[in-house]
Image (cartoon, rainbow, N blue to C red; front, side):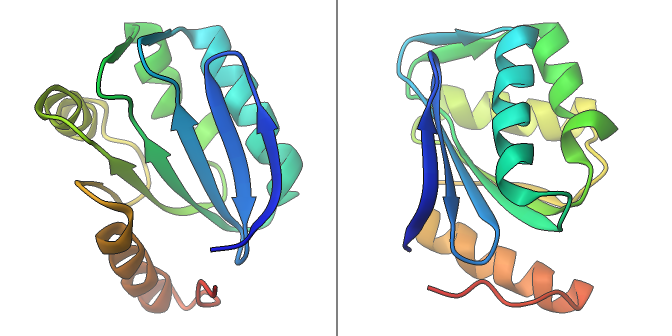
Length: 138
């Protein structure tokens, strides 16, 4: 998919792709704090301009996230206008953390853990269609 805009932050890369799809790629060996989530969210919001959007969040193979950062990630502050979110978990630990996040933090939008981006994009397209939103296009 074509990158429309992108910014490299200290702990993550945030990209806007065609169709108001935001890709967040967390750097390896990173520990995300609440302040990091706020920076990522501010960047995302500058890209989507209050319009509905989808997110692909790619977790690192090795990394962690604080309790406050998890809570903020599931809050209305971060999920506002989100249609759905996909977590790409490249390893077993990141899958466990992703599923824990979904089960216990209960974000207010559809969210699912995947091993690869292609499968996530198919699911996201289905969610968007059910929600009556514009399709994600390449």
